[in-house]
Length: 64
Image 1: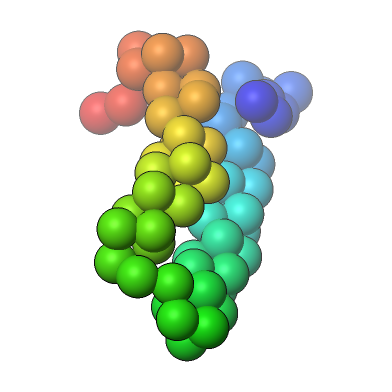
Image 2: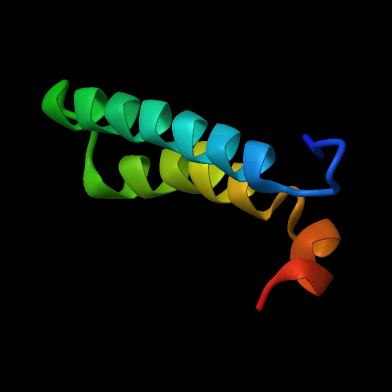
């Protein structure tokens, strides 16, 4: 988790969005390579959802 000196999570959120974008690009490539829907769902859960939920407990009090 990235926290700035101002106790903001903005840098962390920007990083997570960048990583998710890269991973969605990978999923698109896997889809075009012929991976079936179940395989795509499994990879999505493993590399996108897990990354987003990783720091959720730490952010929970910050969300409005």
